Structure formats: C-alpha cells, structure tokens
Length: 165
Length: 274
Image (cartoon, rainbow over all chains, first blue to last red; front, side, top):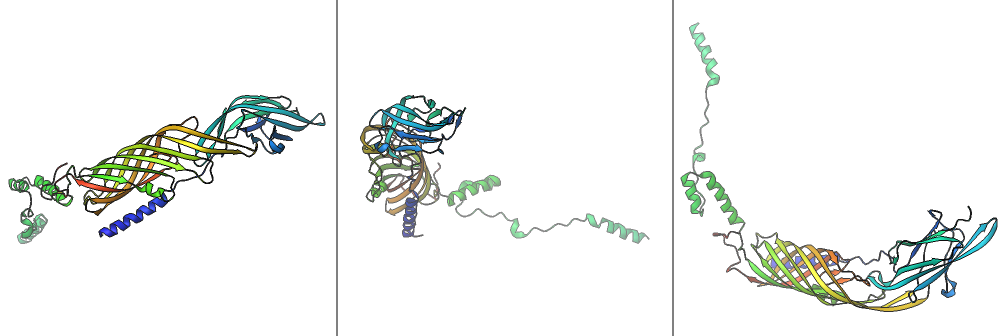
C-alpha cells in the first residue's frame, strides 16, 4: 500500500469510530425528586376504595389522586418551604352509612439543591425529618427512605384503618 | 531325491534374504551452510555438533527475517487535539493533552500523558448550566505494537492507561419548576470539587505523514474506579475521561518522533539483543 492509501484508511476508520463513540443520553430515573408513598390496608399493599389526595393550599385545589385503582402515589413536596401537608379523604361505608373520613399528612424536611446528571438535570432532594398525621382513617405512616431523591424507590408507607372489620 | 531336498532347502531360506536399498548419491552429501552463515555455526558443523548448529542456524535465520529493533528505538512527543476540534462543531466539553512515548524494541511503548480538560454546557431542554473549570489530568500506561516486525512508521497497537484528575465545577442558572405547586425556584451550586480515578484499554494505529511527523488515533474503552460525590452534586464531566456516564473515548494526535539510535532501522547482520 502506498502512504496515501494508509492515510486514507486511517481517516476513514477514525471517522467511523467517532460516529460509533456517541454516548447514551437518557435519564432512567425521575426528572424530579418525589416521595413515593405506598398504600397499605392491613399488611397488604392495595388500592384504597374512595381515596382522594389533595395538596393543602395547592393552586386550584389540584387533586393528586382520585382513583380506586392505585396502590401507590407520588406526593410532590414544596421546595420553597420546609413543610408540606396533604389532605387524604376517604369515602367509605361504616355500618351501612356512607361517610367521608378526612386526614391530614404533614411532612417536615430539609430542602437539598442537587445536580444529578446532564440527562436528569438539577432538582431538589428532600431529607425528611418528621412525619405527622391525624388518625381518623390512617393507622400509621412509616418512613422507608428519609432522603428523597429521583430514584424510583418508596419513601413512605401509609397504613389505612380497615373499617370493614 | 537329494537334489529335490536341496532345492526345497534353498526355497526355505529365501525369506531371510536381506534387501538393501541403495542410497541415492545426492542425499548422501553434507550440504555446506548457506552463504553468510555465522562463523560460529560453521565451526559447530565442523566439530560435529550438528544438532546445536542446526538450532543456532534456525535462530540466526529467524533473526534475519524478524529483525530486532534497538531497545531504545525512538521517543515520540504528541499532542491530542481532537476534542477541542469537536468543540468547534458543538461539543460542550474537551480534553487535550501532550504525551511522551518511549518506543522500546518497536514493541513495548511506555507512555505518559498530561492534559487539560474543561466543559461548558447549557442543554436546550434542560434546566442548568454546567461549567467545568479547566483542570489537569494525568495518565500513565503502555502500548504494545503488533507490527513490531515492520517499520515504526506504521504501527497498530493495544494500550492501557491509568488516569487521575482533581477538578472543580459550577452548576448555575438552575431553574426548577414544580408544576403541581406552581412554584419556580432558582439556585446555583458554586465551587463543587471532585476527583476521579479510572482505567482505559484501547486499540489504535499510527501512520507516518512526513519526515518525523506522524498521526495516530486510539479508541479507548474506559471505566471509572472511583470518583468523589458531593452533598449537592455528582460531577458530569471528568477531565481526560469525558462525561461520567460515557464508556468510550477517542484520541487523535500529531506526533513528532525523535530517533534514539543512530539508525532506528534494525541491523540484519548484527541484531541487538533485548
């Protein structure tokens, strides 16, 4: 081979390698840090009939969840304050009477600005330091992962009281 | 009766008769050693140690075919400029380095690389500006030239590297929109510091362009051994490595080669021993 052929082959292979060296640019986690709450009744994760969740003081009374088919829900936290409250209302039947049971769930946390990656971007993480709730229809709340990141892992487990028993 | 017994006896002795195949005259000669054979080998033939002489003659002929280059064949200085070139076409980060490579026996090539890496990225559809401040990185490793039997002007090699860098970066102009609470927040993360240690393995080629100038590329698979995480961030760009989640890197450089031997071309009559 002549020198020119060597150089031409060299440049062609280099170009092919440049095209092959492109990196993956997908975000495989959430784009925001949201605490995922799993819903339990008794010792089983299940959907809670008649459950609706709204953020207290949310603009337009936006409803987070209103379905009898979900057994987990993301609870978006406010980054401008260190406390966010949610109203959980449950329509159920007690002794053949239909009642609405309302509870309040409040999360206290530290807001942590965080740059995750070029693909997922920058966001706020939340370090939960306290959870309080009323107990009309909520039996207990367990914090599974205090540091809420954009990973898809449950942060809370909400146990509801089973009124059918 | 007697005659018939004698003839039977003669027939019985026929199978014991020995047949000797005559040796062809031309195979019954001791061939003289080829022209140019080392005098020491000729002496071995003369003294009758033909086995040792044949082995030595074989080694001698291999040395004639597969020439040995001097232990210190040459020294190459290079500059890797491909990423600054890519930056002119929209890439948001770059690493550039200078290198020194010692070519030993045209086969083993220990090398060191010292470079500078920087980044500035504001992705269109993202919510931040990442600024990697110009930071140094260092790599040490070696290449193995598969074409060691040929001229050093054309090389095909595999190589390994160990890289290390300490660096700092800022993440600024972050705007975070919470669609549920209808809130927008802004923040900056200044003075983030980190370090990284990584390994590389790659293949490359190098070709002579003109006189002592040559050009070479190397595609490198790299893997992070560890890196420093901060309370508020993970680094996106690592000088000398590229984006943290990348697995491939490419270097393309120009090299100037300095011969370390009077003639880097191998000697066919008196090969040097490694």
